[in-house]
Length: 524
View 1: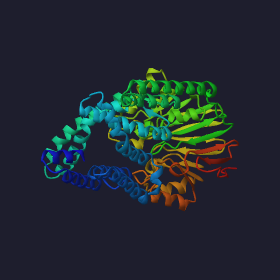
View 2 (view 1 turned 60 degrees about the vertical axis):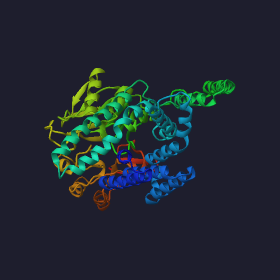
View 3 (view 1 turned 135 degrees about the vertical axis):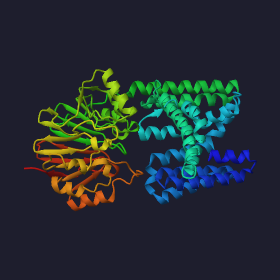
View 4 (view 1 turned 90 degrees about the horizontal axis):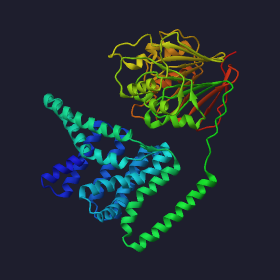
């Protein structure tokens, strides 16, 4: 959109023509990328921005905003609960309301106009979206204004050159390759901005009190500049002092102590955490905590584990080096003492993978290579590695080299598959399985019906993100499970999935979004 507006401005086209061309460019972008939830939302919000600038009255902008929300909610009412929907519309509302006020405040500081605009937009959108980020993810990025200011110069060229590359790929492949090479460096810079700012001290805030303090502190300079007169500023200082005193009193009286530990399980407890489109599975037994996969960085699995009362991890398992399975590994290693790390040792290039292994070595965590025959036991709880046979080659699909584990407690067997599908599982020495973690978030697997017939699971667990762009779980997978009579539980629909067994013969299943579903007798 920005690229189209820039071209129209250079060509001397009227503003209305530029905005209409930008809307056409947005439509072309959505058509090229595909009508996926995130793309559709971006297209609607971008169109809203163009229409807002065309509107001569501020009131009209709100009509367009409401119209866009109605369109998206009419297409999918559940979008209202989606963080992306909430963040997008909060940011647009901030541009309408907060940004003009912030620009007026910053005008007093006599900043360059371009810098003033960047700071106002980043600050306004940051303040408006902070409560949503806190409620949805339990954390607020502290240096987002700096990150946005650093990244802003390359965002429009990155998208424009990417679209140009796709247009030239067939008629002029050499030219497309050259433009793509340039765009790659822009993408590297954008990634560098995210990594550098994200790794800075205090990059995110997870304390509610600190979040409130930083939000108020961020707003304070703008309020100070807006007040103008010395008398108003003095009154504001007195009011702020009173507010801080009240907050300090509340903190002293009602400050939270250390969160109480959840009761240690007297048998088997397996919790499939709802981490969106990814995997993170906590396996617990008397005196043992095992984490198989760590989800994406955005899922903040370490914080989730602390909420469950976990203090340390006896075993940390990487099934395979892909972001949706070990993106949160560094945060977990930073947050907990880990007794041992189980690693498939695959020949795969991955920044998250390399960073996690390096941190484990720095912390002197013992690293064991996952190969068939490896076992871990704690009381009656036993974990057996069935796969992979070796490291493979760099060209191998990492999914086919995922660590496959059987968790056994009493007569109950649970198969944790990572992303290894039936082409791998059918060749493993599997007996009857009571609980099956469906591979690869429920993607299409032609061999799944035969696998289900062979191992006969009573329960299937699917870790999958809501409204994901891959269409997981696929209808073919759900049909196969329905035909086999397997009870299905999904994180996108049911939230966290918790299976527990005290006798090793039956399991109780609970989910975040419903009461206990009952007890299943799985073995005699």
